[in-house]
Image 1 (cartoon, helix red, strand yellow):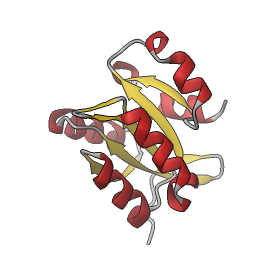
Image 2 (cartoon, rainbow, N blue to C red; image 1 turned 30 degrees about the horizontal axis):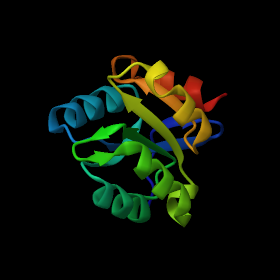
Image 3 (cartoon, rainbow, N blue to C red; image 1 turned 180 degrees about the vertical axis):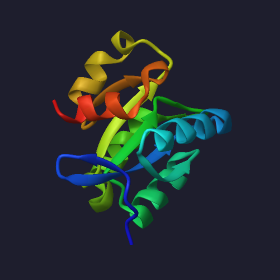
Length: 130
């Protein structure tokens, strides 16, 4: 059963956050939930993200570019190729400048990029509206 949360495009949005930093996961979850986004789950690596997307079927998946020894951009491609992940809007997040990855993100299946420092329900909404 889907829980209610942030309203976007006529639907309530459930989000999965994928990042290898437990501190960032906790802070991002608190921030987004305070702003009305339902954080359905978190994952710290590709395997966990793929399982969570299959189990939770979130509308939005936030994926960090750097997942420890893994590439978040590779995960984005893997998610896009799965039935459950293909149903989700994927947003790449990072502390790196967008310009460093602009071409790769634009060429890939992600809906776009958000800096971790500008992460908010409003920023997610604006990106999804494009």
